[in-house]
Image 1 (cartoon, rainbow over the protein chains, first blue to last red):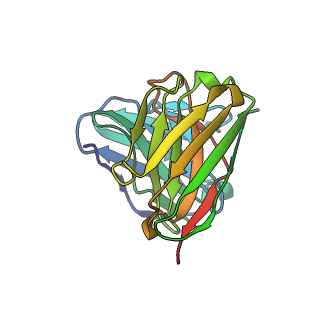
Image 2: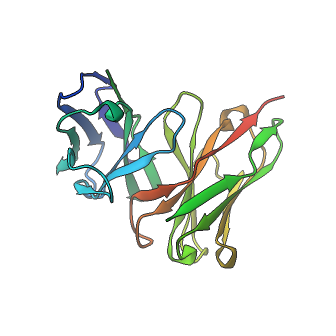
Image 3: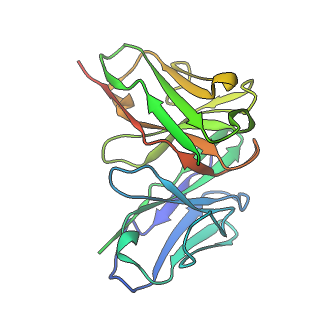
Length: 108
Length: 121
């Protein structure tokens, strides 16, 4: 069963700084990894699909990349509204499940 | 604009049952696979169940298998989650989520606002 590990658990940064979030899969998987942003009291919002494709309406400061089982979400220059929790997610064909990582909180 | 509106949450005693609904609009509902994803208070996201676009194929997390049933009514554009034998650990906000594309897609591009289920005596 695939396990997604996100690091760091918390990232403390300031507006304007670059944020680099990591997601590692426990076994070799496809590049079909998604990233979501969730703010308190809100539903998750899709940021990135298929490791590197920005979802509709997502600013260009968000980018995703992949190297084998390692995936990275980069926020090039943090805006105040970017402080939130970020989750990675994949889909497994066997067993047939969807898997979320534990999340990375980006704090001021 | 895609809208997903959950309903049916509330307080239920351990061992009880509850049915959640998710009414979809702004999409051709029958085209998309749909999932339920939950979030316990202060915790991360946990996928619960998935149903394929046609409704004939379903998948469940081990934590709910045998207790929860996902279903859909495509003409009514509505997704359901029948929950039975509820436990305290099922307490969470439950979101319905729409797959981004075809049935083999990975990501969820639309989410409801969530509905709270509290299991407590």
